[in-house]
Length: 336
Image 1: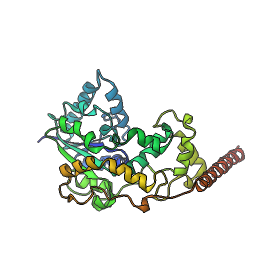
Image 2 (image 1 turned 45 degrees about the horizontal axis):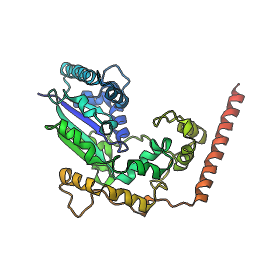
Image 3 (image 1 turned 120 degrees about the vertical axis):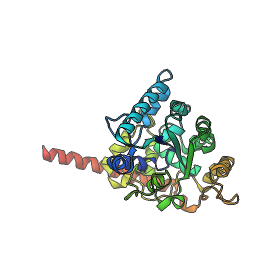
Image 4 (image 1 turned 135 degrees about the vertical axis):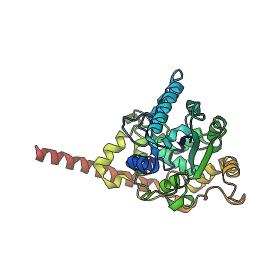
């Protein structure tokens, strides 16, 4: 019997952290009860086991001379390990695979070695832009609108991003899912991932663990004004330090956002109308043509705040940060 590879290629900001954390937490049970292998962060078996290989594939993509060979060698070693231990399914997960041009070529030898299922979660583009701004792009662009101006039609263009994978894996199964609560099985991305990936239905206790909590947008507004404190878009030291000082108030408490207005959200979605229609026709033929692929944005998605209200919220966070740091210093002095 041929071994199966579930290749979770993204998308970013579509519940990947929850899926990966579940894979890592339940790695032993996935192997013993379901015959699934979750490799370590470099497609090996020595650890650490975090349920993802994000930075490994980024490095392999940049290594033009050896990247494909290294991935092929690691995949071959995993195949032999699975055969020796009676495992049937390999789960590889890195949400940046769909973003990084050329990553599909890293798996050139995989199609002949495994039955491949490629899993992709997609979400409404205005929601993606909000999340991606908070996660990465406030560290490099001057404003949310500057980010839209630079990347509209490129980021979260699921149809274009899928095309190289479709061309590389002509015989693979593509499992494209909508990251929208009312479209997910059990309204949960982890339950949805397992129920739709041919792993024998839901695992007990698949409900998502809390992963990748969003920081306060007011904290993000402040961070955007001090971009020099970040080493790269992936540097989160600023947030970690501030959250340690501020506490729970450093995190977002509702789903609404003040980053883009309702009109700006609608404009973003309009720019992707053709892309989303192509995706609907190919992967969601059960959704009628007169029904949008994604539920449209509404006023509930938007938090309207004046500049004065935003400034007051930032001062609140700064006050809490100073107070928190002074408390920590006092405790250290008392302990000494």
